[in-house]
Length: 189
Image 1 (cartoon, rainbow, N blue to C red):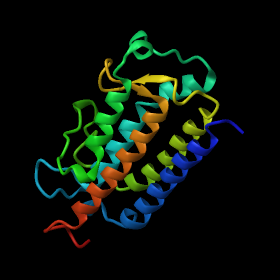
Image 2 (cartoon, rainbow, N blue to C red):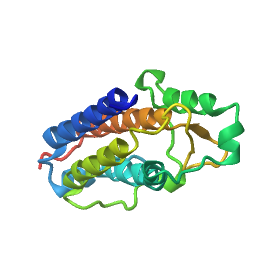
Image 3 (cartoon, rainbow, N blue to C red):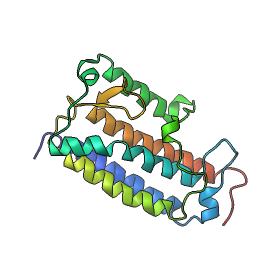
């Protein structure tokens, strides 16, 4: 058993819980409900989950290189004294208690305004893929290995923190999607 097995197991369990919750809460929504927005500047339920798929996939190339032993941290990632700062900053931004909305970077905006009617099924399948990628890295030094944020080449954090960010990000958007369904005017079918 690797030193990371318990941590990876925890992340995989949380990803499974988010997938299960998404399926239960949003899996029976119609295409109209999935694509309804409370206002023009807000995201629909479907866009929240599309965004998670798009965002998480940005980590896959690094995860694959870590798993096959070919990943090399950038020079900045190896020497940056700010890696912990960036992780804490992102985690704080994702904290629902902080009360402020954080606008998604343009690269992570949902791919389209109308998402496929099976976006929740796609998300659940994506969770299995993400879990497999995480499991494939369980022999890596999750704390020592620094990855670069897909948003900015100066933002680096440990692979362990990247996984924490992914899970917190998913819960944040799950709650955002739930709030959409509770908004005034949400279609009944």
